[in-house]
Length: 176
Image (cartoon, rainbow, N blue to C red; front, side, top):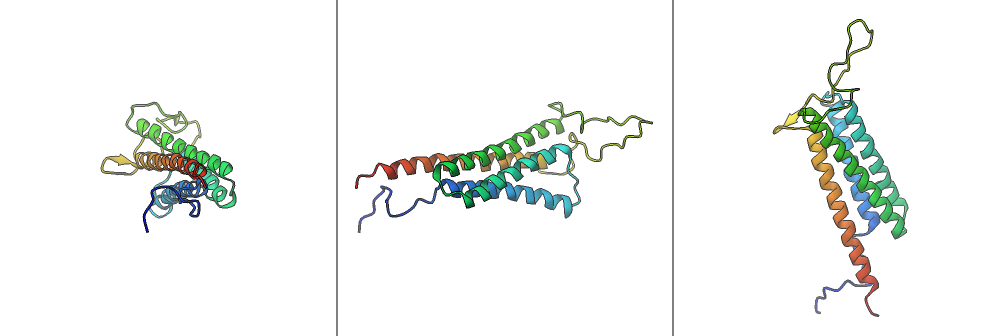
């Protein structure tokens, strides 16, 4: 029996849009669960920008996992996969922006950077500031690791989705 490099019509390719959407959504869910572990087990409180990153990952998890599990139409699953990729990428961009504020390269939002507590204003001081590194490993903060992991997940998802598009085109063009 000879091996053929042409895709077969009898086997479904592993790179389907619904599976890619679920994988990207699972990656976003894992990053949120890791952040929640740092918060509740490690005792590291999140800042406002950390919450922004979490919301993007939660949106990616909902769009990817639930959408990939419930939608079987290829075009809709592809759209949901791109939405999950875009949300994970958005979280990575917020993480990169927060990294810039932590190293005082970029200005951060006024709500969580700098000292805005005014004596006698009866306002509580912010618990966690966005421009202060609360945890780091090898010189990188948690926001930096979120940015790196998010960019990696988004790049792998986009690459897989582009390859899946090519495979589905090749499967359609095979003569009978």
